[in-house]
Length: 299
Ligand SMILES: Nc1ncnc2c1ncn2[C@@H]1O[C@H](COP(=O)(O)OP(=O)(O)OP(=O)(O)O)[C@@H](O)[C@H]1O
Ligand SMILES: O=C(CO)[C@H](O)[C@H](O)COP(=O)(O)O
Image (cartoon, rainbow, N blue to C red; front, side, top):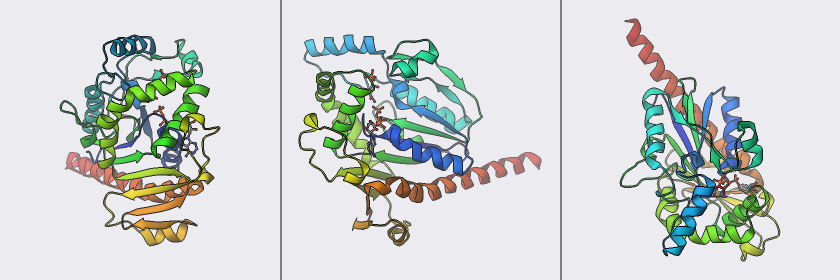
């Protein structure tokens, strides 16, 4: 954690909606005049899509599991290094994983490949991470300890799968069977690396549909915001102004002392009301820390 160079991370499984909900952060950053460097978690995959296909086939033949959720397929140490470098020096090294032709063409590359690693200078106020592993802790790497505000994006699992199936088949060119295989193959790593993160988060946003999602593989569409509620759980509810949220968000209620529930259509508003003051606070502390450093230099 660093007062001077804060890190905010949204962590969630594949298809959870980390990219989609990052728009809410983008609005807040713009409203507060914050310059954020955005890091996508997929940049820390170890392998290109063709390499990964080969390794997955080999693992299946050997009866082993191998998925995008685990440490064999992701360089957690490189991710931790980026977070540590940013919190200590405000800089670091990053790249992008290009999923689609739309993303790949501007780089003159193929989908499923990485851009070259690039150095990021000291031009950002904060580092914003969205992806699979913002709160990961393993024997070798502790990514979570560098994060100042850690948010979990966790639809209930049937909805998560529906979101993944639709996104992967419509935008990333995979077949339904391939997506199903990937979900099955990822299960062990899901329990080992993904779910433990949600006990380290400061706040979890869990979208819960109010329509039947009992067979995610036959769903005709992704349940809409209005066909869902969002369960918002605060790890430390001591200073949370629940009466304010209940007044401001029509149709909201509390289901536990630490848990607010809002209608799905109010998710954006709820995120803004909850996260903006937290980010403002992070920025005030950052600015105060900066002034302290300047004062020391002047004297
Ligand atoms: N709140 C929501 N309401 C409706 N659809 C949603 C919502 N959140 C996400 N989706 C849809 O779910 C799909 C997956 O979302 P998104 O791409 O944001 O997931 P992700 O967590 O970034 O996945 P990955 O890490 O695999 O890139 C997208 O088609 C998106 O439009
Ligand atoms: O969402 C994912 C992990 O977060 C993808 O499964 C992973 O990034 C591989 O992407 P692609 O299937 O486009 O090669």
